Image 1: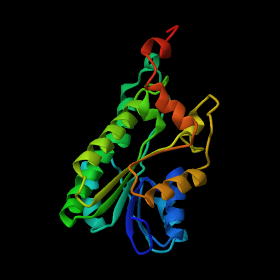
Image 2: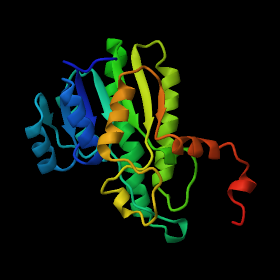
Image 3: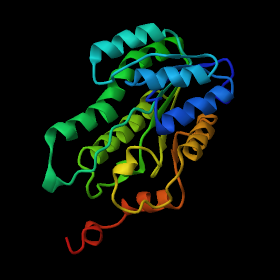
Length: 241
């Protein structure tokens, strides 16, 4: 898919940060948008700014709500799963409810949405799927209980779908950003390398959506470092630990 004009996208996780910037940039290129998130007021305010857009309030942790939302969405050209939850957490400060909530939004919510959309795309022999993962999904990191695991699962899901949907007419892509300046990363108490604005990150995502390439990691060289960690021996990664 190389153009966005007159195509309909369901953007899940649209009310804040990267999702909001994505909606603005896709709308500027002529896309019709169905915007979903839990915050009714933020969604309606965004839709008031953007032509050819409508709000569909959705909690991705509610299976029945996802099923009903998919029915209301109807036939679409593409779906973007950007819903995300993040709370820094070390294993020494384990909070099961918080960890499970992150996994429910970041990964299981994606399964719920895709379970409603993918069969439709396969049946029509066309569809565009963009999953917003994270560079944190490539390696276990400190203070990432719940978040890192859920993003690693999303990366694995995307890779499996890429295999299975080959030659189906359905395009699957995975976009893995680094640190983006949002209300979620504001919880971090450390200096975040190569921190990006939501607008700059959205430009990268929109550019990726204009291509058929499966995987886009950014920003470089931070993404190279994160991928490279996977090739290091454990004794080096965990030295002194």
